[in-house]
Image (cartoon, rainbow, N blue to C red; front, side, top):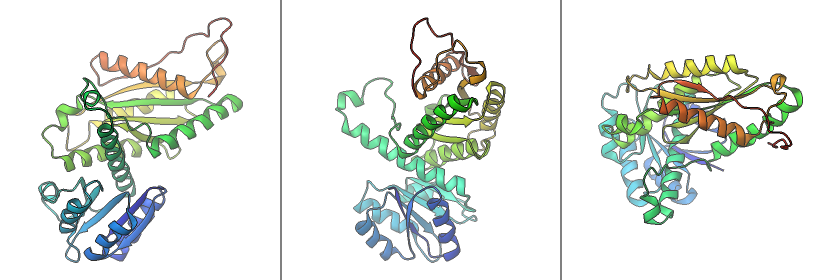
Length: 313
């Protein structure tokens, strides 16, 4: 189980943070001093550390010491709303990301989840041979992350329900256009914060029953149950427009590949499965990017070849 250590002396703030993370299935521990935090880092080996920078706790000093002793531990610094220069301060402390209050549940949960996935991807990249790691166009794949595995299990279950109860489901793959170019001028903590803002923005633009998780840096997948083609296209277009409102990167755009299964009109079509939904959405995304990006492409599933057995989810 993923675990989080919160170093925060304010009881109301630490309680809110605990609720945020526990609602996302994290095991949470709270400490209020630097010494307690260092002790728990070594004793509990948390998955991530959230450290507050305030008059009562020097989160930056804690971050420096943690990075010196346990460099593989992701550290998220939390600043008060009045902090005017969080980016250089977080970078100077060696933090992996930072957030500035007031803190919202979606932003905290997505930033923490993204940090863990980025660290997982880095560890995976270091585990492969150097020649393979340096291969052209190599992507950091986080498809084995807890968030993606949760989405996969959910989608497999919903695919079966969709076939049985005949309701539509939609899957959309989203990728930020020219991400490396946009992120190049930013420090590593700021890059992580921006990606967390993007994920929070996408999540807030969707319904409570929809699920959005990051796949790789800058690529996300959203699942929308009970959503037919027209509704899914409207949501995808809204997401495409919403990304353009991101203040730190006003020129950022988004490409989207959409796949939909509608049982009511599926006669003569290949049966839906998790695999073919992902393949269809991936192909549609490639077409959107090949056409210049900043667009939504819908995948049309053709008729099932004679004699071919339906695919199971």
